[in-house]
Structures are given as C-alpha cells and as structure tokens.
Image (cartoon, rainbow, N blue to C red; front, side, top):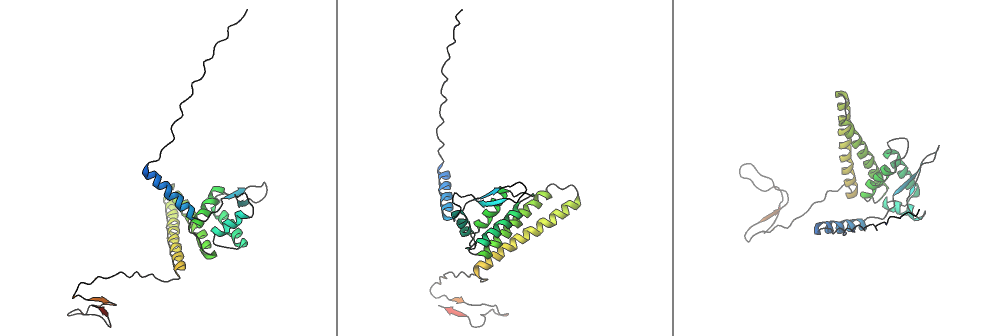
Length: 220
C-alpha cells in the first residue's frame, strides 16, 4: 500500500539583528582606546607549553621566531637576549600559583612591566618587582577576606599592609630614578598691577613688624 509523504514546510528564516551602533560617548572611548594602543610598543603575548616530566616552555606568541623576541626586548627596554629570557623566567616563577606556569598570570605580569614603558634594564627589573608585589598583595587581600580566626586575620593584615607600602615605595623609587633624583619646580607668571611690587626669593616674617628676609629680589 502506498504511503503518503508529509509535506515539510520550509523553515522561516530568523531576522538578522541590526548591528549595534555605538553611542557618541562610546565612539569617543573607542577612538581613545585605539590611539592609546597605537602609541604602545607592539609586543606579542607569551605562550606557555607544558611538557610532561619537564619544565614549561615559554615563548612569544608570534608567527616569526626572530621578530617575536625582538618585539619583547623592545617593550622591556633592553637589547640583551639574556636579560629578556631571565626576566621572563623570573616573572613566570613569581606569577605562577602552583607548580605549573600559568599563561594568563604570566601575561598579566608582563603587561604590568610593559605598561610602565621601561627605558632600560633597571626600570624593567623594578617593574617586574612591582608586578610580583602586586600579585602577592592581592593574594593576601583575598586571604584577609577569608580568615577563620583572629590570628589569621592579624597575619594577613600585616602582610597586606607591608606589601602595599612596598608597592608605594617602588613607585617613588621609579619616579626618582626617571627624574635623576631631582625635584621639578614649576614657575608661574606673576601679574603685578601698576604701582605694586612682586617679591621673588625667600620671604620671612620678622617679629614686630614683619619684613623681608635676606637679599630678596624684587621686580616692580
């Protein structure tokens, strides 16, 4: 006996949603992001390959094995292959939470160093130390929020405070190194009305009348 085949209705095509149109504020933010990114040194991310029974292999994630390391060295402010390899290995050890190297943590630590735009090996090393201190600070911040007793709270709080102060000291050290230990003084224009007098130099108040200090320079 012949059977009737059911007619299948063609599936209705789902409407394609219109592409999202950024707002004017979003457009400006996107343009600002593009400009900031274009101003940075181009550098590849790190790729971590784990070998069974052996150490992890950390290499630049770049199609050219020669260009990738050069871009990393440029971003680290060095022309030394030995320095670059050594610093990347130290960052990997500092960023890893377990026995295996963490690719995301390594790239975060590297991004911290490159974000400082180091100009030489000293600045790159200080940036690596800042990355390590920041990671440790956040570790103890997490522990401080998950303490079981007062002793654990005191221990985590002391470590957190020491690390936070260390990070601030590192920022000051980097600032002093970049400025050569010199303080920058900003001189502003002074507008003096006709008949007035502007005093340039050290001014001290003398008891009993208040006068000028020794050898002031005046302009009229």
